[in-house]
Length: 463
Ligand code: 6PG
Image 1 (cartoon, rainbow, N blue to C red):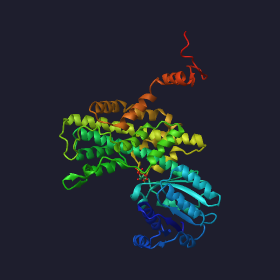
Image 2: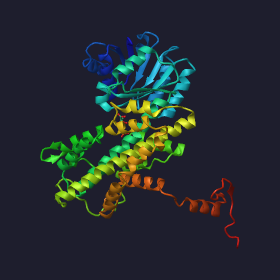
Image 3: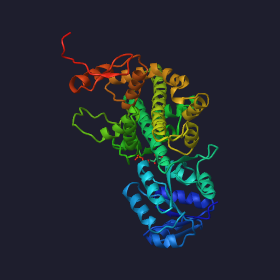
Image 4: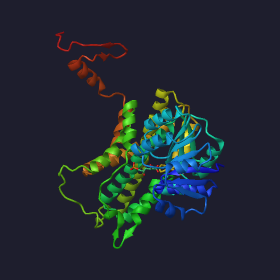
């Protein structure tokens, strides 16, 4: 096991992953410019912790080759710190960025540090505070062969399912790329759950009944970490009110979902469920002052369905939720597949599913179904079994989306997932007219049926 590791960043994730590492017997040597902060954090460690208030002191007090783990905000803070470290570290030292960095920045960091023979690892860490402390899913990207002791440490702190939920991917940015796609799928799953809650709430279910709906998904092997925590969230009360009813309908984000979408645009991959989830957060912060009436969330809506109608709605909704989750996963995996093709990588879905089967935010029973299909088909995303997961739930999602729209209930990810599937499973689509329009006004040429040739048509020439 690694004797020591440098730790920079003692926020929620940094401190908790440090505790996880120290528990495995590796010494933590932490930097923070505040000695008070170091003293406060040190109290939580049972030994195995020493603190330094300058980067120089930290580096001087570490044995070579040094391993430094950065757990700080992505973007400018990470780039600035890596630049500072590049002037302090020696050949064969290792910089591990455990933040939510954009994969293209990690590729850049890897290239820059390699000029000084300093190794760089871009490491996606998923599972939030609890995951960092007791077992995250870890997605490691590196251009270098990793030291055995470091591999052992990362495996030992990772979640168990029961295998180690740690994936090792070729390329400095690849760990953060896989984590970014994980987050895009996470956004879609979170929004699908939120839309399910919204529909049930607007149909007269109270929070406890909705919590029971989400809990019931376990019985049909369609639960997930996000579904389980949602059931817990909906049961929490604050005095006479449910806590969730006291929270503003506004959602922020730190950007990982947006970066997934931007990457899908760059790669030319259709990921509308993920986009709609991100856009729903943007819309929650948009106000055209069109709101007519505000249905109060504080008073439980009166039931307006009889028991049998409630049961059939929940059954259809459960199947629709699964449809949307399958669609979102397919879209995320398609981004990875296209990235492989474009960058000549060979990340395989088996490794990724093993990586995501524990500790991460999107861990779920659905992954078991994807693993089973992946093991029995050459090309998972083109397999008939995967198509069947969508087809068998199609009737239900059509019912849910159409009835919700007629009640003026917006379900963006449900609607987009359905529309995406209907378009991709249809015999034809109206893009022939798009070709014609582009050629009419811009002479962008068209391809005629049964020909690969591009030709321009003189649309105004009389027959
Ligand atoms: C995880 C989460 C986590 C997430 C942050 C911010 O895998 O543990 O995805 O890394 O990125 O909680 O999430 P937002 O992008 O929604 O702000």
